[in-house]
Amino acid sequence: MTIYFGYVYFALFIAFFIGNLKSKAGFISLYVVHLSTTVIAFLIGFLLEYEEFMAQLPFNVLSILGVILLPFTIYHRNRREELESQLKDANDRISQLMIIEERQRIARDLHDTLGQKLSLIGLKSDLAMKLLPTKPDLVHQEIEDIHQTSRTALSEVREIVSDMRTARLEDEIVRVQQLLHSSHITCEIHGEQSFKHLPLLIEDVFCMCLKESVTNVVKHSQSKTCEIRLAVLANEWRMEVQDHGVGIQSDKPSEQGSGMIGMKERLDFVNGELDVHSTKEGTRLVIRIPRIIHQEAGGLL
Image 1 (tube, helix red, strand yellow):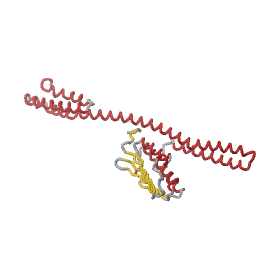
Image 2 (image 1 turned 135 degrees about the vertical axis):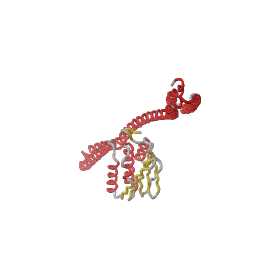
Image 3 (image 1 turned 120 degrees about the vertical axis):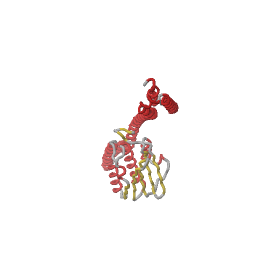
């Protein structure tokens, strides 16, 4: 073994170490040199010691195959482990950013809803105290307004708390259908079955975008119809919300409302895109999220 097949035998160990190289250029260079020297050593030994090499021909053939395949196998395994480690770090970072973004969203919602309602209650209370000595008949109306404002604030706080839970697209579709029906807007949904097995993060983003889009249709579009199309393409998930109303009056983000800005911010975390096509015949929102993000074993990959 040592005298006749020493280099061919030792070539397997060299192939193992070449496979652990991290530099692609170094790996290819040493792989070519090593494979060439192994083949040359095998041919020389085969010519000089024909009978011994023929007796150990299966071992020599397996050694040559090992020299060919082993470096590539180890190199790609190490690359896969390195990429999986980088991906895990990226997913941890995304999770942290999602927590920060969710805190900011809750702060905005509380400021825009509860803060305004409490300020209004304070103003109404001061007005009622001033009217009590001179116009007691108007105090009753002010107290009624305070009561109604407090009930509205409580309802909005409950809605904010409800939104903090992980949303399901099936439930959100039912809610938007009820909202559109109560607003006397005809709703058409296409491709609902294609979104049955979405990752939880992607589903939550789509739920938020669907809710905001339909809310904008109800509040601003003056449309009588709303079409929702869901599609799973080769490289992306896509949702389109189309109305036939008056269209968006401004292309400036600051004038489109916090809902549109919130959708864009949420989509940024999953590399998604929001395209808005608005004309006098209506508005079409196209939400795209790439499918390179998928869920495996409870994590994001």
